[in-house]
Length: 273
Length: 106
Ligand SMILES: Nc1ncnc2c1ncn2[C@@H]1O[C@H](COP(=O)(O)OP(=O)(O)OP(=O)(O)O)[C@@H](O)[C@H]1O
Ligand SMILES: [Mg+2]
Image (cartoon, rainbow over all chains, first blue to last red; front, top):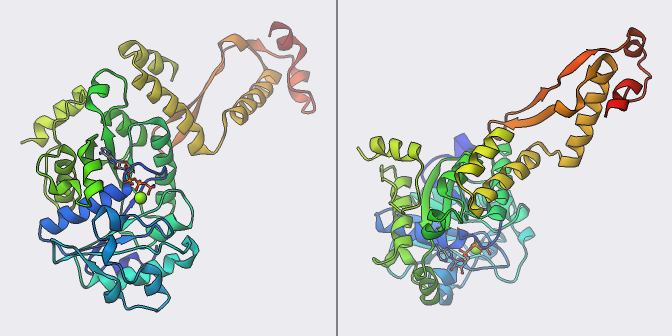
C-alpha cells in the first residue's frame, strides 16, 4: 500500500483477478503477455496460482520448466533461472507457479520482493491471480499498480467481481478496470444475456476490453499458442486491443453488435473521432 | 427503485433484464453487508418508533435502499401519516413497538 510510490520504478505491475473461477484470467494473462510482447514491450508473466499451475500450458511452455516461483522465494533458484523465455518472443518470460505446493508457501511480501527485483528489467509484469479472495489473491494483489478484473456477463461472475472490486478498493489498489469475457453477441441481441453496458451499469468500473465468446480460444489452449497469435480470431483481436490500451493507445471498441445503448452510441461519435 | 424496475421490465423482457434486476438487488445488500432480512427488521423498528408519535398509513410506507455506487448508499423513506398519537404515547419510551391504534389498522 504505502510502498506503492517508492517501488513504482520501471515496470508496471498488472494483476489479473476475478473472484469467480474459470472466467478467463489465465487466458487473458497469456494473451495480454503475448500481445504486449508483440507490441515490442519487455514482459514477464507470473503464475500466482500456486498448486494449480496453468499459465505455462496455455502459453505452450510446460516442458521447459526447471524452477518455479516457490523455488525463487525459498532461495533454491535465482530469479533469472526461473524465467522461461517464450518460443517466439525474446522479451517475453514466464515465471511458473509451483504445482506441488500450496498458496501459503508464498507471502504478499514475497511477491513485492520478486516484482521489485524484476521492475528494472522489463516494461510490464502481469500476474495471473488464482480464483477466490484468500491468500493467493492477496499475493497477486499486493504488488499491483493496476488491477484488471475479468468477468463474464453472467450473474454469479458479476456478483463475485463486485466482491473483489470492494476488496481491491479497500486495499487501496482501486478502482481497477474490467475485462468482460465470453460475451455472446447473438444472445445479447436477443436480450438473453447481460450486455457490456449492463455490466458497466452494475459494477461502475471502466471497461478496458470486451472479449467475445470464441471457439478458437479452445483450439489455442489445445495447441499452446494463445489466440491473439491467430489473425482470424475475434477474441485474439480483442485481447490485442486491450494490450494497445494498456500501452496508452486510444483504440475504439470493436463492434460486437451487442446492442449498444443510445448513450454509448452517442459517446462513440466522439470516441471514434 | 420500484419505478426504475418496472421501466426496465417494460422495455426488455428477456432473461438478461431479469439478471440485471436480480444482480442490482443482491449487490445492494452485499455491498452494505446487510442481508435483506436484517434490512426488513430495521425497517420494522424504524416504523415502530415513528408510530409512537404519528398515526402512520402503514400500507403506503416505502423505505428503499438507493445506491449511487459502491461507496454511497442511502435509505429513502416515505412515511405517510394521518395524524399524531396522543402525547403520553410518545413520551413513554418504554412502550412496545406499536401503539394499539396503528396495530388495529394494520
Ligand atoms: N473468450 C472465450 N471464448 C471461449 N472460451 C473461453 C474464452 N475465454 C476463456 N475460455 C475458456 O474458459 C475456460 C476457463 O478459462 P481460464 O482457465 O482462462 O479461466 P481462469 O479464470 O484462469 O480459471 P481459474 O479460476 O480456474 O484459474 C477455458 O477452458 C478457456 O478455454
Ligand atoms: Mg487460471
